[in-house]
Amino acid sequence: MKKKILIRIGSLRHGGAEKVLVTFLKNLSPEKYEIDLLLNLYSGKYLKEVPSWINIYYLNKGEMITTNRIQDIPEKAFRVIYQSILKKFPKLLYRFILPNKTYDIEFAAIHGIADEILNSPIKSSKKIVWIHNDLSNIPEYTEMRLKTFFGFDKILVISSKINQLFLDIASTEEQKEKIVRIYNPIDVNEILELSKQPCELKKNSDVKTFVSIGTVFPQKGFDRLLRVHRRLLDEGYQHNVWIVGDGYDFPNIKKLFQVLKVEETAKLIGFKENPYPYFTQADYYILSSRYEGYPTVLFEAMVLAKPIIATDVSGVREMLNDGELGYIITNDEDDIYNGMKYFLENPEEAEKYTKIIQSKSLPFELSNAVESIEKHF
Image (cartoon, rainbow, N blue to C red):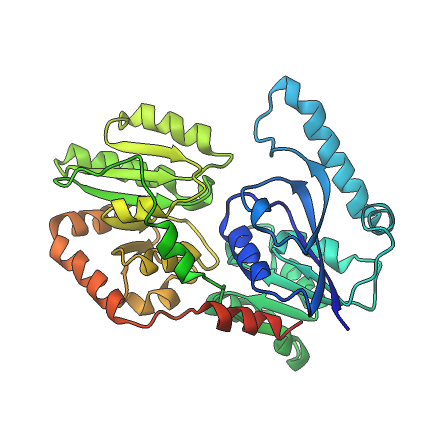
């Protein structure tokens, strides 16, 4: 008999958690599961990758509204109010959106949907949450708030640091047993194939290029990456910076390009369905994030054998094997400067990372990662 599973996530827009979820779904068997995927917003590049046997439900449809233009306010307000009502009165959701369905498992694919799953009127279901971020860096996640996650039957965490965070606040052995360290599934073959596609940007062979890829949020630190870029240029270090991604902070970052006068040496490329050709064109990958959970993009950079500079945020030491597989810098703007300057002054040292990465068996494998999550179903 198939297990009936409800999976909830905000949308399937570009993002690490969204990509990982769809990769996971593509590797599940329709012979074993009957899956409903409920989106707050029916939107995103990964929608078309969801297997056809999975039923998709949604609360709202259309693109995410990230501005406060007058013409957008009514739609934006409607979405907020509508979702708030369904969150407060979940029986309405399960009666009208999910027509009187029952589930064996209800799964919050991101921490932001945790309350909705815990408040489900289906009391008999097993409840699971998948945590992709280091919540200790998010002010509203106080210790009391974090303890609410122990209402789940399983807490899947993607890094040792997040694992330790929950172990430290667990008050019983039963709570500790709920915490499960897993690897995010990465499709190595897909990345390698996609990286071979054409790229409209061609790097200057005489000038080193740093690429950074991610949703354009303040969390990613693209503002400090650009300020460091300007500082290095002023000191005579010729190089380029490419930022690939979109998000609500895009207009601010675009304005910063103009303020810093770096339009000639830096590119704000925007969202790309296939970002991997930009990896292959660039010389180095740089992670300038202020905080992360487990930045899967570093595994993607390793698949493509790129020398990495990364701020010392959650997951980085674990992924880069304490600096063996990439150059780890402290989480501040001055050290982003020092790291980029080190690679520019010592390109031979950067290349050593490429050789080490190529010689290693990378610590993720699609079937094993999927199996490690699936066993908790």
